[in-house]
Length: 341
Ligand code: TXA
Ligand code: MG
Image (cartoon, rainbow, N blue to C red; front, side, top):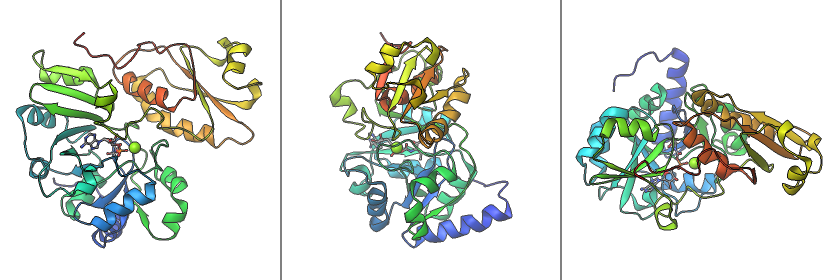
């Protein structure tokens, strides 16, 4: 992909980052969703380092990031028409396609699965970095396993201060992430799309592209979520316990409810409010959680989920449910509902 508008300063850090990757190092790379911790797919030592730096269990596969359709196709054993349709509609962008993997994709990247997750990110620095380092980079979100994903270079620096100081990780600063939530992960199977993780592309957007003859299912059962092994119930967690109140503000919650959630006094809480606009809320969510988590003298976080509409809120609510230690009330929609029922 031709890369435009890369400043001289970015050009210098890009060159350093590409060199580090080519030597088998790891680079924190900006994408439009969240920052990723990237390694070359042909460097087993670098792939191992990604798992080790993140303290990530080896059963949780990495997404491979590309900067062209041709590169994506070369990494998949099959490329069904549905994959072509979705890739053409949403790439570069926040959609990961899970497809049968080509034999040369390292089992360590896919955690031994027969499939590989593929995504072409939209951030120009990510595309440039991928172009300069062999055309494909494996990258999970650049956070310790189970924690909230970083949406700025400063978040990455907080998460990996020692590793950056030691030279194990080079950070490529591409500003604040445009979307702020991870990509939508879709398993493509003939005429069925299994949504393994809601994310930056909504179910409604996918439906609008594929039409009514394709079945879209949300992964719900344990067996299905085992297909997206990293998307665990307790994920995206701040360090301090988070109370999510669905559709109510702190003022509307009773003292008894707070007590049941382990909070004896309202002054222990940091309050987090999200904008009602879904795009703004998605962009703010992880930064707000990190800011609140760092607030001195407070022991717990309280987040009021405004009662707004669908679309991107499905992804936001998914993260809130997983990040919450306690929930007050019910989400406005019970779950990431399949639109087939
Ligand atoms: O937006 C994103 O997807 C970000 C940026 C950096 O691209 N990446 C990201 O990666 O969120 P990670 O590793 O934090 O989450 C990837 C998710 C995990 O839940 C993993 O289990 C799932 O994708 N996944 C990856 N490969 C898979 C595969 N072959 N089959 C099923 N699930 C897969
Ligand atoms: Mg992650």
